Amino acid sequence: PDSVTIAGLAIADITGAAAIAKVEHALSTRAPLKLGFVNAHCVNIARRDAAYRRALADFLLLPDGIGVDLGAKILRGEPFCENLNGTDFVPRLAAQLATPRRIALLGAAPGIAERAAAALSVLAPQHAIVAIGDGYFGEAGRPKVLATLASERPDIVLVAMGVPAQERFIADHLDTQHGTVFIAVGALFDFLAG
Ligand code: UDP
Image 1 (spheres, protein in one colour):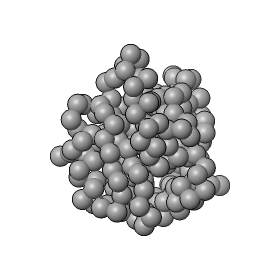
Image 2 (tube, helix red, strand yellow):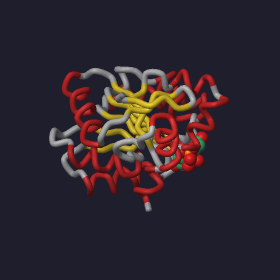
Image 3 (cartoon, helix red, strand yellow):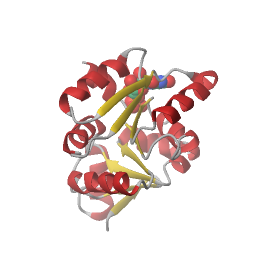
Image 4 (cartoon, helix red, strand yellow):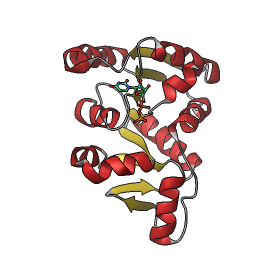
């Protein structure tokens, strides 16, 4: 099968190269694609949070870590073909996308998205990479964030607000006026910012 369902989440059993090809295809056809990573912590949240499960229903979910690998082994006797966490996958994706794209970063503490954008620009200089703002804007700040995204018109939006807030935000508030590919990236910005 090309996915394994754990706690109601259908996790894709695809290689990183195949996942990158899916992103390329979404970008070139302008077909919206939501991407997320599922680790053991996410599985625990999914067990008790129906809104999180619903938010993820139309995400392409990639397997992150030994917890879900063990789940796949138990459920079908085989681990996932590749471990794909956001911290490794997103820089790899950005570096491999040959066509210059507009990439927006939203989330983490104030100042971090800017530093992460600068670091990502070094790894993938072909793209126009812009920091939208931090991940603590709240309901009051949301209209401004959405307006900024709509005016920046990014191809890819990276959202780093922790699980499940980042997935809920993508599912509930982002659509084609804000970007084409939406990726929930967890602690990526902190990692890139050093
Ligand atoms: N974060 C955020 N807004 C929030 C909560 C968290 O922007 O309301 C950011 C946090 O600063 C970090 C990232 O989300 O950069 C991932 O947070 P954490 O590691 O706590 O979440 P996890 O992915 O482990 O659930």
